[in-house]
Length: 394
Image 1 (tube, rainbow, N blue to C red):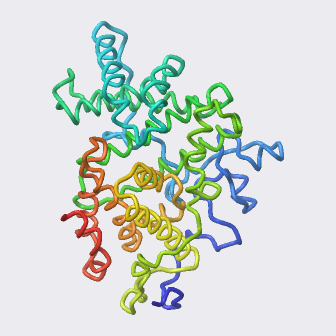
Image 2 (image 1 turned 90 degrees about the horizontal axis):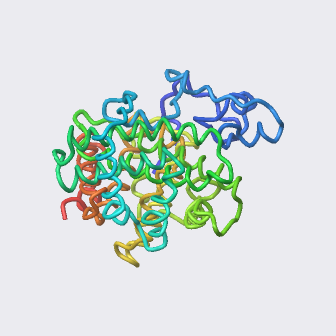
Image 3 (image 1 turned 30 degrees about the vertical axis):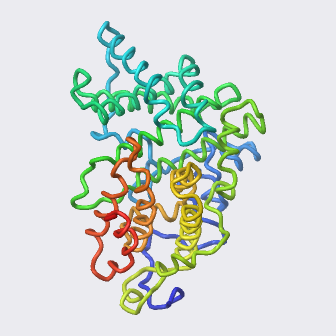
């Protein structure tokens, strides 16, 4: 192993030097200028709030210089803002059908465990009457559920088109609500974020993978939801009656300050850090990248240990699902750049979805992504993919 090799090519000029803190891809303008870590809370981050200073998020205007913060709209298939359909009898009938679908089937089908069932089955429909974002997110998932389980033709105009329309509408309303989170709206904002993450995962179904484009947008959307939960917690605090607090509490042992925990070991996945001479000569490498990969492997190794102990349990599913929420921003950058080692690690994560393929909202996502990554990387990386390929072939 040569993880500290000096044979790496020089870093691209757009990367600033490491200055003793973790680089924030989506931080506010003031935190980046001061070179301090930004918690990315909206509309005002913690540092700006503490110093009573204006807070400006400007990364979305610098797409060529840095990875922009993803808005959920960008995940819609046509990447355009959908016009809201006019009020009409057909729209009322459609929305009644979608509400019925969610209440009778969709809500209970997307529950990862018994602990959260009361939120997805009962609380979300009740709170949706107070939030258009939550309501439209329900409609979006219900339409996707119909498309997947009953066929696209089941809804007039196509169930997938209906789903895309309500997804864009949900994004529009969610942006408004996340800009003014308070104690009364915290639960709604967090539950909407949960539904949107599920929808983003479903949108990986059947996507074009030739040529392979890494699903960095899905990772980024899930990662940004962590800031939403952090802001909600600041508003509600340790309130046992708050759904937001209970959801945060459920995953508190899976992260450290909103990042993958840097604990445990990755012995069973250590081969993924092997750097033979032929890779050292072409692979960009620094201490930050090494730490990013090792932190990801420690988390994935913990999932494997739990899978050995419990099989396809609800706890395993939760760990697999929240990986994108807490993964390092640097890892998302590396995936976006298509670096082979990042893709190989991502393939190991996708392989862990295989045991849950019977869930309609997961299906063959894991199998399809692993196979596509194997086709995308050259022969020097194929040996690193032995386990994921074995899993999807079983």
